[in-house]
Image (cartoon, rainbow, N blue to C red; front, side, top):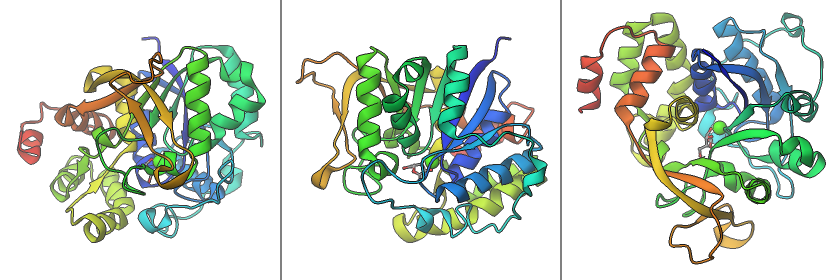
Length: 328
Ligand code: BDR
Ligand code: CA
């Protein structure tokens, strides 16, 4: 099988960590590197968290590169209230000593410049798009060599999670998101927008977590450790028993496009005012502009969890129990 090369650009982050776990257990993917952006956690903390996850997976061979430490223009607002004081659910996992890494100390941008010209490399963007916007502005030819961008971000019909209309990744750095949509548009390439319309349907429940621990006690317990804070946050803010795990859906969709459905549209990101960070989806074609995005609106939740459990937890049988747990 020819594996697809991807860079995961992320801000770990609890659900980013689950996404990394899914990507590294998906044999269709060759994860060439993980670039870190300031988002859920300050960039250094995100870097340490990525290393903690790689340590758990025994994959310290994957390069982790530090990127932007703040949004392009706006003051940086992290999401440690959602992801815990350590950005990883207050799991207090030990730092990975730096001598466990043999990689060269290059920046995320230098890494993009080194890897993207090799061709056929896609980006799965799971955080604010600052790293990508910086690349688009400073190395436009290299940016133009990105094969595809699948972005966890935005919302179409769903309400936001940072304002009535804005999702965190686009709200945190709206200028960056706007640039990336514009620059892809200029190159007639479509961003796959895996927004809140679909990710809100990916809820990790206590039953699913219990099932994960039965299937694979070590990995299930690791997931329990990093998601406990997230469960508490969702109860306090949304009265939801469980937690929405956004980012792994972007990875799953990259692997299997049949998991989500949607439509092509022109999307513009608002950078100012009360709608700052909103993804304005011109479904009715008012602007008469060609589409620059695939906006996903439907998701097969059962198939997502089957994929996640099969790969990350090594579920090996046809999961009748999963259907019961998900009540479908
Ligand atoms: C997005 O924001 C972050 O909190 C999550 O990691 C996800 O990427 C959801 O709005
Ligand atoms: Ca994220």
